[in-house]
Length: 283
Image (cartoon, helix red, strand yellow):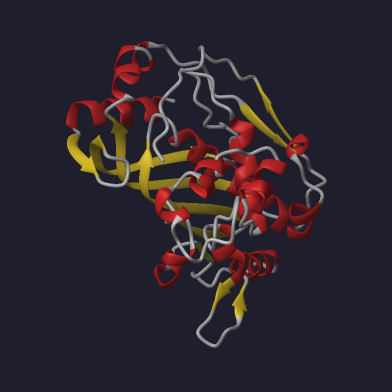
């Protein structure tokens, strides 16, 4: 919580106003932020100065790991975050590659599970990583990336959290995640939960102990209509201690994540929080 609040205060104190063409709003913007999560110590980075809805974040992560390409698929597992980008994004609605209602196109998990090689071969990046790590192999290229400039026109949104690099040191697994753009009041806690959970899950299914997760953000921003609630409410609240994430120990493989795992396989213990804050969402 301290590093989250420190980042919010840095943006308020040091940020520069930047016009955002996509949303038509101004953003108070800071370049370069580094966050760190103790996954091995199970200090789950769930925001306590407002109520944070962690289940939707984990559901979205599961959808990415499964390679989902439809907002309907995400809704079915408890995540509504893709409804607007799939169905209310004017540029995507006019895109000839859109395949109808709820279609997201080739974004995020589609790239991670079915990247199209130049020879037409489908490349499953996540399977390669899991197979390597399960055998104790780290070739310094255990990288899962969703960022495919050659197919931006085939999806409704460029990935914000775009690349995850796993590093195996002895029996301890580390993760470094890169994010090009971050809506700090609304989106960051989703990203924090997902980075933490991704390392915890991959460590569990590959038979390793989780270490730390390192989260690098390039463009961290607060939209102009979010600044009031941030400075007048959230930054004035005192944080509580971090809760713990409990993952069903029966999850032992990538196939488990692809098939039977649901939100019931995740629990959070010791979550104390302040009241929710209704931050505006920008499409």
